[in-house]
Image (tube, rainbow, N blue to C red; front, side, top):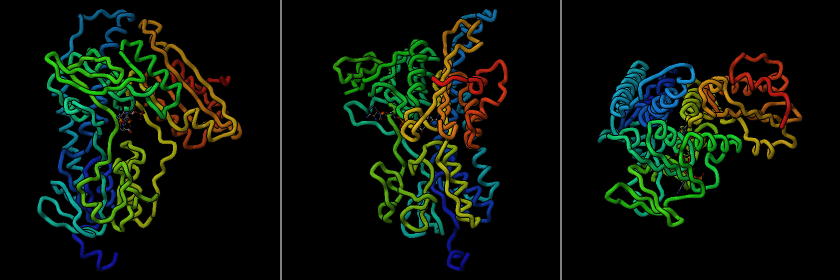
Length: 453
Ligand code: NDP
């Protein structure tokens, strides 16, 4: 470090204490950097406060309805179960508050200074937070994203996932607009909690970008559970009526609901930070343009996580954070790797996948073998549920390497996490075949599929 760098208040000033920002701050501090993190809202960002964590708690809550029903086939008799939304909300809020405190101590234990308020970059290496100026050798933008809604008449009556986590009352009827992760997850949550739920998606089949067999399987299973899912359908306007909200659809028909939840994507949170004034290149959708090392177009300004709109997942932001800390403060320039990132959609049943969809693989390789299995899990032979599990392997025939693994069914996320390690290691189909299964599990199907479809 040279003398001029020592003149700054900090070596690194992070804007945003979400998953990426906190990790970048802590790890940089552990490498000896003097670090501050600015945050204007609750610590932990989207994932902790209005994303992954409360969402998964809600998924658990909503799945009990089916579990109670399934238990009867195993001999249980239970009184008619009832659900109290206020208990779930209070318990969820308590857990989130605990996590907020954990994040605060993670920062202070690492020697990172927490600065409360909205930060704005006011000049090269200079920021202002709540009227106080700070200087830093490096500035990291880790401000995440924010729900984006289309501009249709009456959109102010709709809520987003931000509000869905704090509704005072559980709606009796919910309309969900969108066909991505958030929309299918909330459709399952509301339906499981007993809300009359309709999901509208503007295209022919939701979960665009996922493997087609995954998309079809999720739609079929959700419909079997009684969800009203409508494709090629969209809202033109929302009106407030005495009995709730009326969504006027593009085909002229209408639907009434108590809550209309829009899950139509998220926009990087990059406005009002002083980036444009400094000449930081921003893509048309608002993402900060970065190079392979997460460096923006302006020296000294870096960006990670959803603010860069690369792969918008918490573990990816954390990975980008670790790479950046190594690059800046350990003398080891490290590029984050965005290939073969495993992910799960906590729909009901859930999706787990890693690697290429069949369609992507067919574009990437001349010959592709596909192995697919659909079956009723052992549990459902007694539960009476007709839920089907779908598992699929996509293999590059020339190298025999497994290039895509997909699953729709209970514990898909847990199962795919393990298989994603095998894929990272370059596993071939022959190696999966040589692996002995664990019986009886659903996961064993991945090592016993013999004939391509
Ligand atoms: P997505 O970008 O995944 O999906 C947005 C959906 O809204 C798409 O179906 C899109 O349709 C539709 N849409 C967009 N604009 C309109 C419009 N004007 N009118 C009607 N429909 C529209 O966004 P989400 O909000 O679901 O999630 C945001 C991000 O959060 C994701 O990128 C994901 O990475 C992350 N996330 C991850 C989770 C997980 O890992 N389990 C859980 C939740 C979120 P179309 O397909 O036609 O474009």
